[in-house]
Image 1 (cartoon, rainbow, N blue to C red):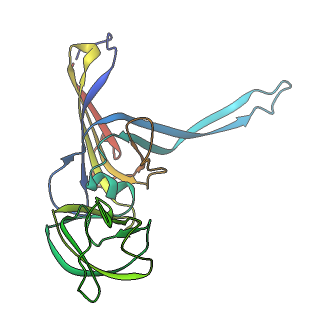
Image 2: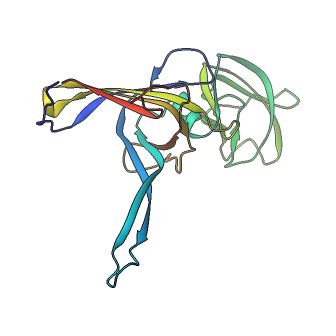
Length: 246
């Protein structure tokens, strides 16, 4: 087979993941600006002691590991859960009647559910109905008590409705092992296909999670490429494979 020697490379494309412990398809993980495999090795050498001046009698290199790094720009619940060793779930919308809290002027009351609508705030026991934007503000994160009618240490009841939302609970599970596929196009070589398959990738927790920043947030994820003992045969890699157009 003729080998194409001219192959400048600038790839773009989709990255797909599948948890090996769960049946199902590989799912695209959104906009990924970096996907890199770093191969580390250990060098051993034996000095030539047979003559003055030294030199090397023998040398050996062993691969000690392969690490994958990715930069994810879609911080959806599933990607966050992977990067935080967590669990993602969806909560359906509903309504709450008389959720009990204690109010303090200038303080936030975090409600059980975010982004409340149709809010009613009364005294506890009921009898006084407080006025929005005079006694309190409705915010996505809850109810903020303004200076005014509601004095400190006042027991209140809050009724409201809420829409469905997603929840990510952090650090509730361990590291998962995934199968990764990259379906890329080499834009520097007439958009020729470049496909990468990693058989077993153990993803580590993200080192940082930016919530306030001057730029778009990104999730930096690393993982160890592990051996897949089911891949057998001469010339078959137990770690990863690259396919590209001739």
